[in-house]
Length: 179
Image (cartoon, rainbow, N blue to C red):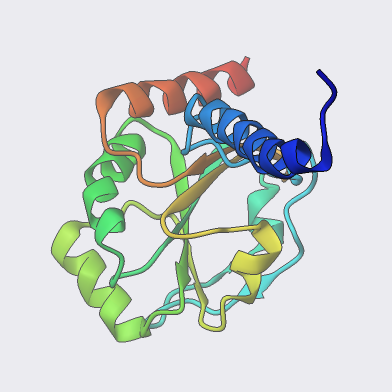
C-alpha cells in the first residue's frame, strides 16, 4: 500500500510529536543543578567593586592571592541564600577562604543580614547593578565558584548548597585543587 498525501498529513504531526517527546524525556535524566559555564579554567572577569557598609570591597586581583577560595553570589532578599548560609559558615570555620559578591541589594540590608546570620566572607563586593554577576555568567542566586590561587575559575555550583552531600562534594573539589 502506497502512502498518499492524506496519510502524510496525519503521519507528519505524529512523527514530530514522537521526536519532541523523545527529546523531552532525555531532558528528564539531566541534573537541573548542573549549568555549564564557559568560564571553567579561564581567569575570573576583571572587576573592582566597592564594599558594603564601609567594607574594603573586592576586586579580581583579590582572587589571585595564591589560595583556593569560594566566591559566592548572594543577596539579603534571596531566600535560598539564607538556606545556604550555614554551609558557608561551616566552610569558613573549616579554613576555606570565602568571598562574597552581594548582587543588586541595598548595602544596609546586606550588612544587617550578615550581622544577624554571621559573616562567612573574608571580603565582600557590592555588585549594585549586577554587571559582575553577568560577567561571571550567574543565572540566579545563589551561585558559587571555586577559584584557584592564580585567579582561574575551576568549578561552579548553581543554586544553594543545602545538604551534607553538596557540602562534601564542594569540599572534595577544593581539596583536589589544593593537592
